[in-house]
Image (cartoon, rainbow, N blue to C red; front, side):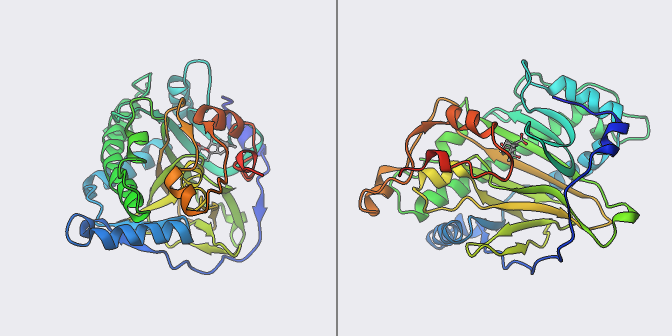
Amino acid sequence: MVVLSKGELEQIALPGVQRAAPPLAAVPEVDLSTAATSGRAAAARAVARACEEHGFFKVTGHGVPRPLLARVEAAATAFFALPQREKEKAAAAVAAPGGGPFGYNSKRIGGNGDLGWVEYLLLGVTAAGAAAAPVALPGAPPPSAPAEASPCCFRDLLDEYVAAVRRMTCTVLELMAEGLGLEDRGVFTRLVLDGDSDSMLRVNHYPPKQQQQQGSRLTGFGEHTDPQIISVLRSNATAGLEIELRDGTWVAVPSDTDSFFVNVGDALQVLTNGRFRSVRHRVMVSSARPRVSVIFFGGPPPRERLAPLPGLVDREGGRRRYREFTWREYKTSAYRTKLADNRLGYFETA
Ligand code: GA4
């Protein structure tokens, strides 16, 4: 991982966009509290419809305690307010042995030259919700910072968050299977709960725009689809997320601190033989207020062979849109791509 010094950071030219903000999205909404009662079938249908049409929807009634969400938001804000040196120290400690994408980074996204107006923490998480080694982020916060900005406490808090969000994610994944009419309701959940599940947590901080940038729109995180099965995002009250609709137009997603936003990822598009859509999205920065978002990415184990589910292929007269591949194979190829690339093209059948 490359950790840039402050001077270097300021020299990086970011892709700026002058276009006006797109219209607001009408985001489909699913109330998970109804799924626990008589409304289950309706919730499953609503989830499947949203995944087919947009690959994106909003979840309310999710059961993740509000105080936990508030603590995570406060701790993330405090973490990113630490001196640059402290954040970089934390990066060195969470970086996976032998390198990899994990740790703290600023402006650089992936390893192939993508840049954004963002700094972030990227962590691997095991299915138990605990940290994939090593466990703690070192470095004491300045005396003025809240205790949860201390990297080790922050990591513990994020583990608690992951455990809660993973539970909710599994409910959503079950509803997806039910909405598709699959007999095996656990077909997606099992992959994310597997002890070797390749899941991640990303904490993003989009710094407010400086005065000379007012009026322009900066690319915070460039357009892309997520590789995994499912991504579950929560943000503070600052907007910025935009999604691409089927007709190619972009719409802005109003922020909602009480809800989670769910994205279908590439792996789920493959498993559903293209019926669910891996949604292309991006984050644009046009606000003078910082945006903080936390995203849980639920992925399968590296050894998992992914292919369209036979039941869904049959419904399309036997047409398989993707060849079989392992998650490890997909990841290897994904890490050679640029953010905006179509990573599934390589796995499509003729
Ligand atoms: C997009 C979704 C997740 O944030 C992520 C990203 C990853 C990274 O930041 O290292 C990738 C990107 C994401 C897709 C293609 C590759 C890998 C950067 C990049 C250019 C953590 C992920 O899993 O894929």
